Image (cartoon, rainbow, N blue to C red):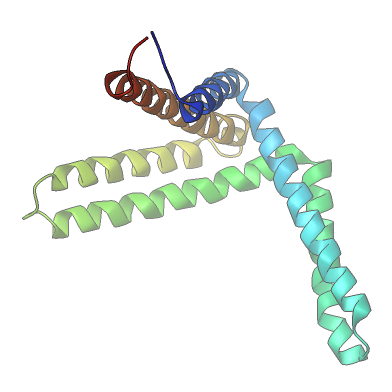
Length: 182
């Protein structure tokens, strides 16, 4: 009999949902990436609106100027991301390429400096993979915007969902071993 735990049930539901959404993101990366850009655009628009409201609430013209200018620019950037998500994908993929290259170089340098530590090679391998991902995205830019973000998010969701399912299974096993059986 599987006694289970409420936490286990919630982890299973979230885990399955993440795996399904992750697989869909991998199968349709441009759609998933566009959704991410739309969400970012909405968040940027909200931040711009808050800055504008703060600026309008100021009494002194000197204190109004900067929040109104920044708020207007931020809101315009949010609207641009919402209106043209594929351009946003291109920009975001370029940022990701630079991030992966920088992270890869950093990991490789740390690994070489840590050669005395057991397992340093895994940090070096991780750095090499990051560097290769950055190069792949950069070398195919701007087309990489259509696949990179969606696939990266999809892989992340699949891995996180799988980890949650594994934890839920472990909790179920522990509950079965500890709790009395009927």
